Amino acid sequence: EVQLVESGGGLVKPGGSLRLSCAAPGLNFSSYSMNWVRQAPGKGLEWVSSVSSSSSYIYYADSVKGRFTISRDNAKHSLFLQMDSLRAEDTAVYYCAAVTDGYNFGDPDYWGQGTLVTVSS
Amino acid sequence: QSVLTQSPSASGTPGQRVTISCSGSSSNIGVNYVYWYQQLPGTAPKLLIYRNNQRPSGVPDRFSGSKSGTSASLAISGLRSEDDAYYYCAAWDDSLSGRVFGGGTKLTVL
Image (cartoon, rainbow over all chains, first blue to last red; front, side, top):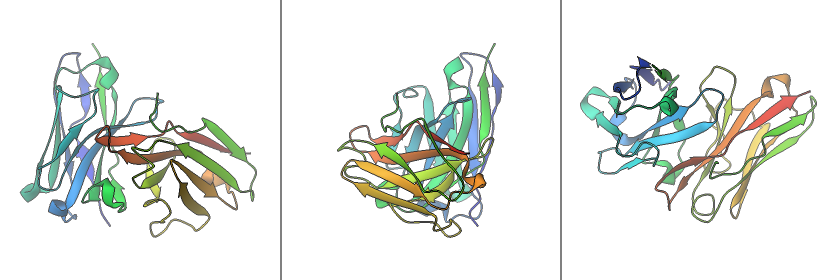
């Protein structure tokens, strides 16, 4: 069974930074496109960012462009999200999700359990 | 405002069949695969349907997906109390170069 485990969430002040991690020890990690999706309290799902298997393609939602940076380390089977200039509206549970070759190919995806980020003074 | 449009709520009684719709455009549903997720309170989304109409192993065949043009639907037959949850549709959007989700439909099993 594929297992994705997020970590790094917590309480941070507005304007601060946080780095999220997603570990995928049992996954053929280098074959998967990786994604971050967030869910604000009581709200729906919002896509944040995607990185292709070899990091050749990176995409961001407009709401985080210029503030968040997605990266991955295939050797360590890990995905990261560096979040800078955090705002109250970034408060959410952040999920990582894995899909082979990107969503254009329509394969099933796998999700972690999420990590909570709270931006508040 | 979500790029994909879903009705905020739906309801049915046990044993009934309900359909949840998802409306998009030519840059997302019209040209890319649709996914459906079920989310119970306090838990991560669970994949129900991928590639428009495929079920992962373990998902009952009571759940089915379809797509026509720029719209998609999730049908749940033989409704059960445990189906009481939020349901989200999703697709890749070529114009936005990103994934888009519907706003979610809260299904209440009466």
